[in-house]
Length: 269
Ligand SMILES: [Zn+2]
Image (cartoon, rainbow, N blue to C red; front, side, top):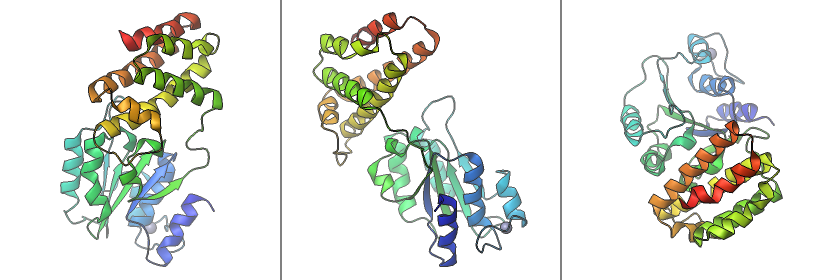
């Protein structure tokens, strides 16, 4: 069943979720989720004609508050706290208020923690909609408190080759072994797509390690992450920034062998 239909069905029993994570959805689809919460005639689906439906479709409803990031930066934790404070204010026009967090993966550890209590037990007239391209970037504590709707193909799986390369690089970084990083990146010499995919996979390792270094120890599936976490938050954040620099360079720079050679140098400079 498609995610939208299964969400709509929860309304017939009045057991609809108050906190939803939508993975891989367009804004248009997200608007349909919002409309379902706000529509005054919600039955099998939002009616589409009431003022709430129409305003929701344009993302222009006064009871919809949208929080998002700018320019690929993280969402400041103060913005999250302000949003949580607002959630105790009664709705203006509709029966509910909807708080949308776009690019929820841009919430940092503090931001995600600031949200926890609120999404666990939102005030009765409040609903949360978190949007992200990839749920893996959210804390397990968030994931366990939301109802997840994933779009098919939302989170692309990595190829074996990329996973393998990322794991080797992560391991080498944890050992502070520049030569091992260099050797792990050798397959990238003639393969930019593999390099980019591996860097993306590497970010998962770094992110997991950052969470562990930040005290979120329940994230246990990846042993590399524990080793990496020993590097400490400051070093890990720098490494994550360096990965992003490398990704930007890769878009501009055509010489793949040079790019590849720069990876280890970048990490250890
Ligand atoms: Zn309606």
